Image 1 (cartoon, rainbow, N blue to C red):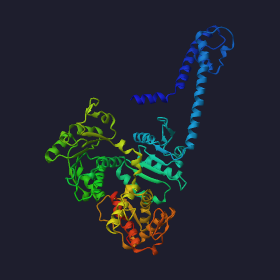
Image 2 (image 1 turned 120 degrees about the vertical axis):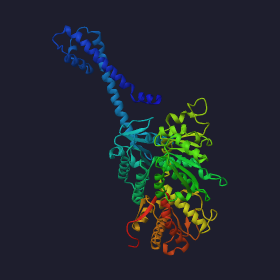
Image 3 (image 1 turned 45 degrees about the vertical axis):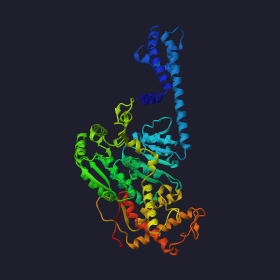
Image 4 (image 1 turned 180 degrees about the horizontal axis):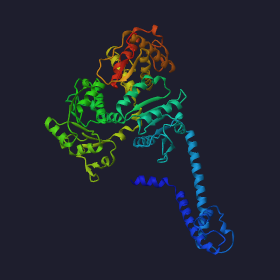
Amino acid sequence: MTTQRSRLVRRVPVLQLVSVVLAVTGLVLGYVGFREYLEEHPEFGHGFFDLLYYSCQLFVLDADPLNGTGSLPWALEWARFLAPLATLSALVEAVRLLGADELRRLRLARLRGHSVVCGAGSAAQMLAARLREAGRTVVVVSAAGTEDDGGLSVAGDPSSLEALRAAGVARASAVYACAEDSGDNVLIAATVRELVQDPTHALHVHAAIGDQDLCSALQARHLMGASRGRVRLDFFNVDVLAARRLAATERIEEHDAATPPPHCLIVGVSPFARALVVELARRWRLRPGTDKLPITWAGASATAELRRLRDQYGFLPEVCRIEPKEIEETGSAVNALLSATGSPAQRVYVAGPSDDTSLSIALSAFEAWRVAPGGLVLQLREPGPFGVSLGHDDSALLDDLDGRLRTFGVLDAACRPDLLGDDLVEHLARVMHEHYEQAARSNRGDSEQTHASVVPWDRLSPPKQEDNRRAAVAIGEKLREIDCAIAPRVDPAPPFVLADTEVERLAKMEHKRWLRAHRAEGYVYGPDRDDDARTHPDMKDWAELTETAREKDREAVRVLPVVLATAGFQIIRLAPAGS
């Protein structure tokens, strides 16, 4: 609260306040003074509006009754000096504002490679602050256009051409559309694409979408045409990003294989809980072994929600043993559930439909307090006072059960530039490389010693990571070639299988794409692969490739249905195969 008040004071310049005080004082004293003075000068009007008019004339040094001689009342003496001072201070303030506005425009015109944040809500404010902390130059576009902590801002509709052009999006490196309305964010993304005309300019646009299903549908449609755009666009959902971060920090995939998998209890059927189930399954999938992760999902409509989730993410039953429990989302219901099972959960995640509900559950579900320190996670939209009040020392307002209870803020976790950079294209590129690495090891007998690309994604060289990203962007182009499309997976369906003729056709496309990309990096043909010398034995046309080299491209095509399925998508035929 103190910080907000100090910002409010800073936003009202002292000179403006002085001008107002001088003007009001001068006007009042002028009125009082003229009423007394004009009693001795009947040749001038004495009415209310006459006196008010003469008082206003003081501000331009031209009051008619003062053209004569004689002494003046003290109030009028003060007024004839205060009024011009008010005019002068207002003029100085106007010049200052015009100069500051012109300086701001010049600064905006010179910006290159900056970040543009659109919106005025909590997510936009948090993201702008994080970008500044990372050393980025940030321009905030909002209807208010309020500058915060010395940052640059543009006042106007964030989806309008004028406001985005003023913010310099055509020269920016990233645009974050974080308006409260998802439709506005889609419009912002479309407007940015219209403004960016330079095909060589690298711009990444992130658009927030509140509904997870809508976000998936938009991602699918954009992925189909991603290769045709001048900007890299990603639609993101705050709950999904936050759940991904929480699952990553839990490091559940590093669990000791010699001990049974940890039993996870998720309380609440909310968008965040839904995303957390998927992200925990994805992390557990990275772990070697066949043990399934036991998850109990408790809450109203848990059964129906789990059925819908399994329809969308077919890999869930392969890696998890999820049991839904239909209970009221209260602390007493959680206590009864844990007492009935007899085996306490090792990790408990409370993600109710509202922050108040989640807090009430966490503070009253005492059967869940027996977890290890940090094992009881309270999800809040914004931690606010609860996050800073929890602890187990004298400074804490609320006891955190000796470290067992910890808060997790969704906006705080999701509004991070590095996490937003790990978008759908990045995810698909990573999965594509994982399949390539697995095939190289098992089918061709390659290893890290014999092949520089047979390494985990985090150790893959940046050029090779970028090649996988380009391959992910080209997925839509390949599917259009065989009259197919990407759609969110909403119903259980058999695995999509490409015909042999389609595999061959798309494999040739993939090789052409790979060939163009490597030629652009300076690669030429050589009998041996040498990344330092930029030589590769596959730098030739498809007809001249060995069968082993062709099979690599075919395998890259065959895994496309699996790669898309990990992100909750499926391939749809728009016409019968072979037509």
